[in-house]
Picture (cartoon, rainbow, N blue to C red):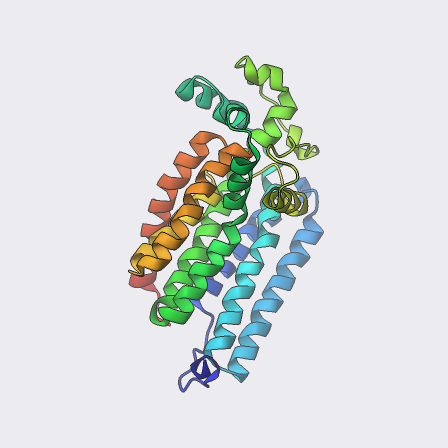
Length: 319
C-alpha cells in the first residue's frame, strides 16, 4: 500500500499514453464538428464539453506533477474512463446527421438466421431467473472494466500503462465507427417500423427518423428483478439510438478477456469468464443488438487488440 503513495524519483513529464489517445479522439471529433457545425443540433454544448475535458486532463496532469506517485497516475486513468460516459452519447450527435442503416442490418440478420434472434430470444426463455442472469451479465460491463484495470494496476503495474491504453483506445475506435455507421439496434428500430413488420420480415428504410425520435422497446424480462432495474436505469440515464454495430459491450469485454489471458492469472481469467458469456448473450436478449453485432464485436475486438498492442509496443515509450 505504501508504494501507491510513494513519490516517484523519475515522474513522467508528459501525458500518459491513455491520455494521448483520448486527446487524439478529442481533436479528430473537434475537426469533424467544425466541418459539420451548421448541421449539428447541439454544437455549443459539444464544444464546451471538449473544453472541460481538456481542462480536466491538464488539471490532473498538474496534480500528478505536484504529487508524482502511482495513486495520482491511477486517478488520471480512472477519470479518463469515467469521461467515456460523456463521450458515448456524443456519438449520437454526429451520426444522427446521417440516414439510418438498420434496415440493411436487420435484413442481413434475417438472411443469415431466417429470423430475428433479438425478437425471439427473450420470448423463448422468459423465466425470471434467466432474465436476471442476462441482466447481471449486461450490468457487469463497467465492473469488468474496473476489475481488469485495477488488477493490472495492483498486480501487473509494469504492464498497466499498456493495458489502460488498449482499453481506452478500444473505446475510441468503436466510437469513431459509431459516428460514421448509424445503426441504432433492435430496441430502437423495431418500434420505429412496427413489430408486425419485423415479424413478417419487412424492414423499411426510415431515413433520418432517429434524428429527433428516441423511442425504445421496454427491456424484456423480470421487471421486479434487481439487475433488471439496474439495466433499465442505465438505459434511461445514457442510452441513445446509436452504437449497435459492432457491439462495443462484446468487443471491449473480449479485449478484457484477452488482457486477462495475457496476464497469465487463471483466477482473473476464469473468474470473469462466466460474466463475459452472460454479457455476450444478454446484448441480444435485451434487444440492444442484432446477433451479427455480437459476431462483429468478437472479430473487431481481436483486430483492435492486436493493432493497439502493436502500436503501444512499437511506437509509444513505456511508462
